[in-house]
Image: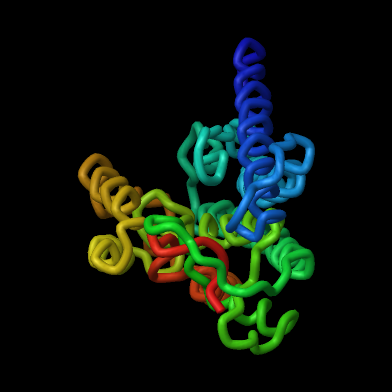
Length: 293
């Protein structure tokens, strides 16, 4: 990276640290109030529970890509974090890969390294966040409040920690748990086998030219998901724009005709399992806020 641009990743990271601390402070205040009733005074410092967790998950994800690029001598930038003044305090992070990746094995390793690394951090954060959460009576929420969908991994972890909840009760999610939930969602989004997403790279490396049909089918599924939850609308638009700009075919590697080795095919199946564990068909609904009972 040119020396006069090294400031940009750092500046974006600091801005995202600030935005996630700010949003995290509100999440902590709402948590103390059980997302209902009178909210205690806002405090910035408790926002670290949320901020440090989400930055660790997203940062590890991108560093997985970055160090895989470094391992293969591929020119790549440091992670760029994207701050946001709403809901999650960030819309994610990314790295820029500045040269063509020559082989399927390299493409697969670089594509899979990110979601696997992020998932490894998200799982203990999820269990830790659920331990810090508490079971409370379902509050009366205002119409239009947010309710989070529960991925399979979230449901399993909640059951292991809290068991079957009494009727009329729910889990009031600690900010660390919410950050882990967001990390699972980000992992699932990146693993969609579409175009230039991590899942698209993995799909092409594993399936070759057949990945084009997978991309088109997956994009159609995202569009259909908008009828289940409007939370998918922005993602569906982004997917359609990406396919319109770059096309459904993944750029070919120099060894396009060479099949992926068996070890990496097993890892590809593992990333598919991670996608299933992290995916939820309705991530956000305008009904209530917090984990469902």
